[in-house]
Image (cartoon, rainbow, N blue to C red; front, top):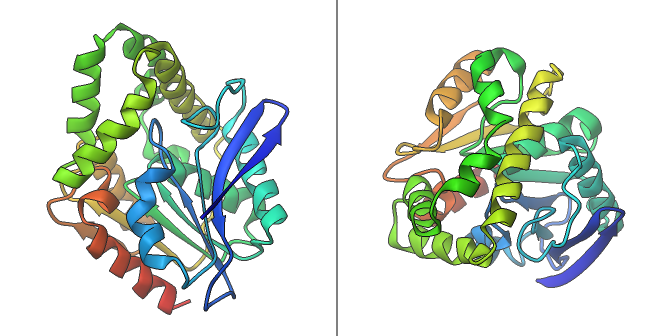
Length: 271
């Protein structure tokens, strides 16, 4: 994977890309969630490298994509993503988004649906307004202070325990969180801003229609917020197929990488 930097008016976006592939009719774009970085998809990159063109990024403000002016909206982020994909010739992407990365994929479908070949949500949630209580959105827009006030060691342990179940997943999450050791204010800004722009995208009440080739993946032990409830409702209301991952948490692709890789490969085979 070759590291590149895309410069925006708000700051740099670091991403990693590999065009070498035996299949080139579409490309895989991996989008990690809040607080985590491109390493979240290491096991997927390793598995699919050489099979498909691949791209993964550190989202704006995260890890290497810093410093960054955190005043952008979710749709601003989606537009930067598209600019990068156009630059790299990724004209028929399959977006695989974990948590907030899944929200970005839905935003991409809203703005650039004609390009999107397929969509996979990994422990994410729907962006449609009718899935949420008003109090949930009110809280989402006011979380930055909470992340500032927790003692660092307590916050670190809590975030690792909440999203992972496996030894590999815990170690990886710990390493990704340690990027922010000594600068908890930065992490709080990332988390607070990310939840806020997600709530605002939900309140926009847009259709966020997904491509016919879509899939939900969710860990059976996902303890992050109400993700389990959202995924059950999302599957029931939309009829999008869902794969439940046993013994996996919110980062199910790191808790059960072999299982998730096989599910993704089977999904791609049907495109």
